[in-house]
Image 1 (cartoon, rainbow, N blue to C red):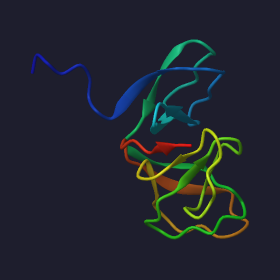
Image 2 (image 1 turned 30 degrees about the vertical axis):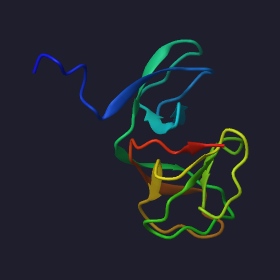
Image 3 (image 1 turned 45 degrees about the vertical axis):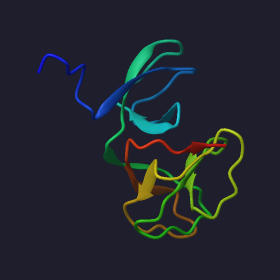
Image 4 (image 1 turned 90 degrees about the horizontal axis):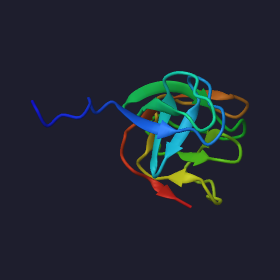
Length: 119
């Protein structure tokens, strides 16, 4: 097809700080995972339709299928009962792929590519 710009599984972004491969990045209202290291000010690609193991707020108790809150200040996912602060993303952007209890610091998350709400 002549009108396809790129496959819909990744999105380009410009790093606002140094980003390491596998790090969660916010592109507007979408969450993705950097596919490679990206230097501050450089352009990279983020996977936006995938399941990735990412940081989780240690105290959060999360059930499979639960919509999640991206806690920007903690750089980790929190449960959907968390009160969003400035820069946090809530809604359909990310869903828990597995359960994770108190004390667990990572979780498999389904990044949907669907825009969430930025506080």
